[in-house]
Image (cartoon, rainbow, N blue to C red; front, side, top):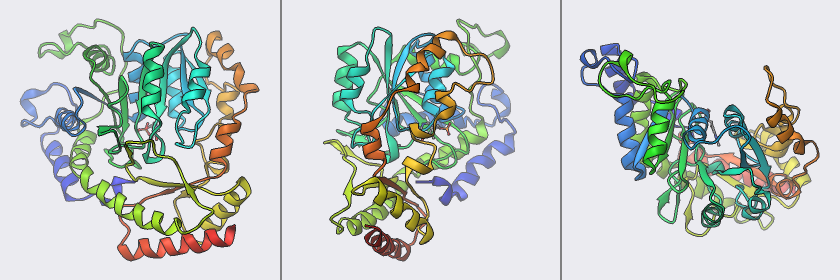
Length: 397
Ligand SMILES: *Cc1c(COP(=O)(O)O)cnc(C)c1O
């Protein structure tokens, strides 16, 4: 998945444009910047690549999720439904706006189980946050239906699945708002960075202003701009945007390499009757950033994971035990370990986590192994890796 593996002359050229003028900020300084507007250009490029009306770049994927929530008016006391399997940014962003993360089970797509979402809806629910994990997606038709029937905002975190599609639409463009991350290990990177995408003009204008202290970006005297509402600073720098601009143009190449490498590994593992694969909803096409498969039970997955590691097959994760992406490891959330006092609403809102179990998620994450697909592997390396994985998994069963 990581675009950093192929960092090269295209990225250097874009960065050099910025270094030559010295204008590292995305707004203002029109006369000094020699016509270079990397953030604006990257927004335009993302807009056309993903066929979305509006794009707002921000400083990270976590910022993108936070800004998406703020831009759609979600805040104190509101409940946001999110999955038990995701990156910690999901609940960080929800807590940042004063809302309550309501964790629910995933299904064999490794994303939100629509039934679990339905069961979790209360009078306080304002949004559903679907996280498109490991290069694939949840059942978007079912989730959209629930969102429209209950008048809930659907936020789509596509940080790990940029370039994947559902029924011909890019992930990130299906919900009311979508989020991308360009951190250093994502499919395309800008070093640090992220984007909020939407077809809703109000959400876009809110995101534009909110991510820059509430500036209305009218006229060309930044100091004299109006501030229609409170904001924050989630700006991306021109240097970061420059790297992102070079990388987004390479996305089709990256996706093609991922698909090729993924296919070799998947075909090899398909020969093992004990191995099954995560469900990709009808009409979905993965970004092929990861290969996810299930083993028959938790014990087998534990043994296979250990053997893969010891056998030198790097980049395979057993999230149940070893990683920060699953609810089992989120003690700091369950115990509300905050540096500063947290509102009573949030504290009370999180008490359910003391007792809630996630049996269905355990059933899938316990048996799942998720392997990163690299861009820099040679054909020979992929073939060898496939063979090694098959041998190790066979001997683990
Ligand atoms: C990486 C990631 C984020 C956060 O992105 P950063 O740019 O690292 O802040 C959010 N959600 C998911 C699913 C991610 O994988």
